[in-house]
Length: 325
Image (tube, rainbow, N blue to C red; front, side, top):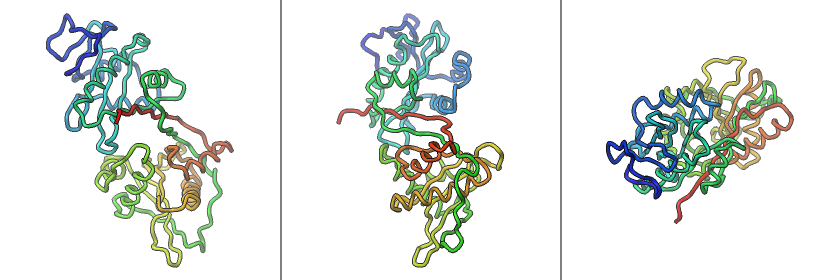
């Protein structure tokens, strides 16, 4: 680390410039091998899927991809960690995550670590930050107190089996088609959809990134279907698509990414989403991630939630602290 908060002092046990003592009395150093297991002993199991995913952001610092990660120790025992890292997919903001052991909270430790990492961001071409949290949590209060504002809400919505009336595609010119996850048409549709619904946090999704992050063998993608327009005069293009990340149909909800052609009018996109979701959830429940920016799908799932035919599995709020222009 090349920076130090104003009220930090060199540690008595400092073995180099990479170790600091904070106002809270904890010693801070860069992330090291074995910290994940040591912190797990102190933190315990993640409280939910959101925390499980965010803990995966903690890793050794690097310049490619750009990331900085620090650990706070109490008498040599790791009790807290924090990181900022840049994504090649969303280049305008650095992701921030911090976690502090329960018996060390409310001592300003996370704020001190944020200050250290924000100073480190001066070495990166991006200084704006983003983070996510649960609603009405201590993390939400922390972000608000440290200059972050809410920019998005994301929910995991579980749609009950048979929640929607099945569309009658006969004679409509619409066709449900199985697609390989490596399909050029599907990959192109994913790229266009992803970039369109992330204007709130600019995305640079490409064909290569779509295959690596959402469609390739390493992603868990197990199959895909598309609703195509075969009506006279239409180009047979994809109206809506769904990618499953659940290998086999079970009574548990299948994890599905559902998207649509962003060139469609909102009403047409909503109809396509509703039709495809009805087909997907005809016999088994389906779990879909819905950001508020995904307006056509949001309207469909909100109606199902209001009617009790779907439930919100978890909700994440995304906050940002943008650097001054």
